[in-house]
Amino acid sequence: MAIKDARQYLQEKLDKENFSKLSAIANDKLEQFIADSIELAKPAKVSRVIQLWLFYKFC
Image (cartoon, rainbow, N blue to C red; front, side, top):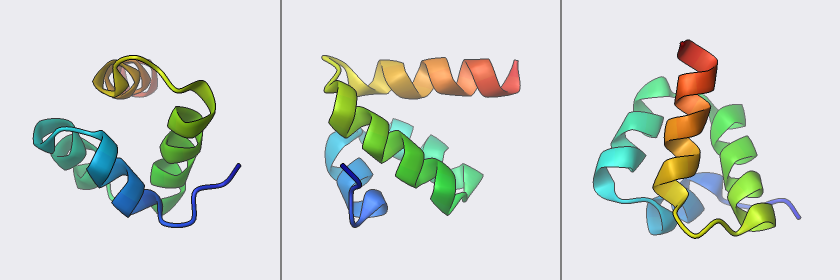
């Protein structure tokens, strides 16, 4: 299931700190991928998903 407005969806699901971190990357495809992943997996803590992805991508 593709989220139509990924930025709005992420803003609703993430706290301000994590939304700011993700927005700083400024990548629409990344935002869409993460929004779709959250919707599909429905994790208990969304912030953990962001932290793990950023660690994987940049470390």
